[in-house]
Length: 470
Image 1 (cartoon, rainbow, N blue to C red):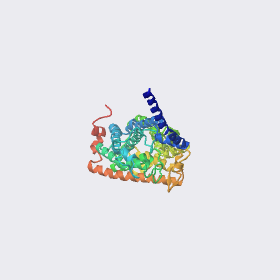
Image 2 (tube, one colour; image 1 turned 135 degrees about the horizontal axis):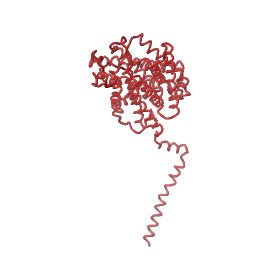
Image 3 (spheres, helix red, strand yellow; image 1 turned 90 degrees about the vertical axis):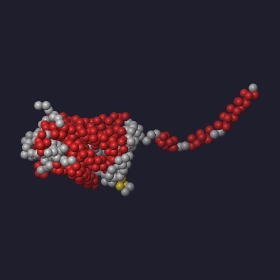
Image 4 (cartoon, helix red, strand yellow; image 1 turned 90 degrees about the horizontal axis):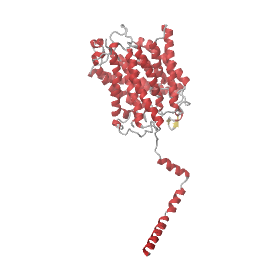
């Protein structure tokens, strides 16, 4: 009995000793204000949460942009060349899906979106995609895995150099083409991508840049860079044998029209996907993209009808692509009526560039990359300087700071000047780098096919195949 009694006493004493400390902790908790408790809870939450809807839209958009390369651009360009060069022309886009993806994995994504200086990111930060996984990068996309963001941006890197191939179709060595493209994306695309979209990039208006250039989905990064580079490459390679004396008509416009439709559909992922979420801004960019393509198709076909007497099928298809390229930089910043007006201007400007400027200057841009993409996006970037609307994208009125002061980037003369600086810098970088790279490649490999190989066609001489069995 005494032992049981002793155990009871020991338990009671222990409880009393422990309880002596409980009021202090309870009082400490009670002393916290409601605001402090909320702050503690917020601190305990993860900084970002995956939104499944946003992530689904981004993965779909990435697939749509890849579809723009294959089969979209492959069919569009493939149908526009002569029969003997169909496979080689298609190969120019197809091979970049593999080559650029590999470069993107190794160092391209890191150079584009890694921490760095104003001109390029650290190529080792995400080397071999180290650290790129399911956790969002809040600087770029706080509601989707960084892997999804990386994949979406990779599709842009693939199609941009592929656009250049249209200007040098039917006359470049395949080995020279490969070396040129590897150097071009490394020296031009990756740094330019960082400058415009990367954190701390020189032209990044939202993430600490110096000159706020508005470019929603790639006017500078994709179209001006590729368009100007295409012009320089076309001039340096020289004209196709027989141009312009011999007719070089498209061998299969049906293929090109199918490619046009795929490009238009994929472009919704290209532009609306650049909202990096499935919200209101994506819908606005989607609508702007569509109505700009509509307007440009009408203006191109109308001018052709007026000046040549007949509207061609290739003309209206080219106008559609021109309208898509023109609205790309502006798609997330302008209203639908403004997008329609920008498309009208873009279609007309591109038509005149392809039919008048090209003939006047005498260069052989085989598939009119400069006339459609370079000229079109330049028009879009400059008109965006006047039509940028905070009612569409409120961030442009509240995000950019200079000297500690918030500066609105709404349309006006000041923003037009910023846009013009962006265009001029991009054109200078693309032209200068392309010239140097092509000189280097020519000294190592040689750019141009022999006259005999060009006459026989690239399909047989470069790949040992033929598109059609006669």
